[in-house]
Image (cartoon, rainbow, N blue to C red):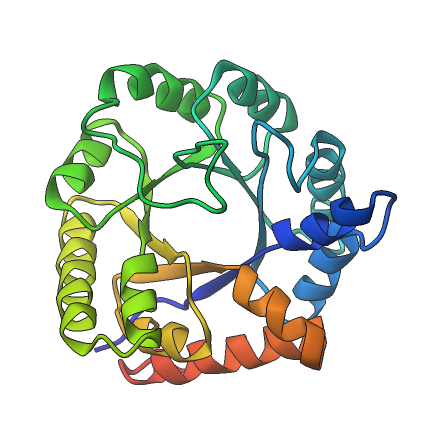
Length: 259
């Protein structure tokens, strides 16, 4: 079975985390973004949190400006919570895409998918405003049929499936749970595609799990950050991106895709 090319979005949040640990200007997440693009990334993801714990407002503005340069021309995926403040920033920044994620200030990282079923009344005008501005909306959700069907009703063109539970089960050798989570992902991706949604995946992916999930033809984009930034400490960011790109291409080749 053939499939569309699989895009790699590199999340640069944790370059900013390292910068903010000491203060100052280095390491620069914008420099990391440009190097990632040079090394094979198809786009850049950055999460502007309400507490600004890593990416800052000026980072988002610079990312949009640099990625929009004609000689680069790559998309910015703006991850954010569904708040009035973030909506205003997104409308002013005008990224290629906004990925709406759940956010709690006490969490270390995003712990689960957005509850679009429970929050659909609040999310409907939020999604509509972004759609009207020509910003592609993605909802970061679990591979749950109700969540996926509600995302389609909200007219968000894209969902990103939170695959963290599957990745954790694979890494920790919990085979039965990994199998159950994988079944949910496959079923959810198939349902989403049948509803006309574009399907992305992210959270917790490493080289091995990215290669595995790349074989799902319904999924057209993976957004990966923490693992590659960790690997970059040992092999460099360019090599980390190239190795991830190669793993994804190997996985994609299993369904008849070749670059």
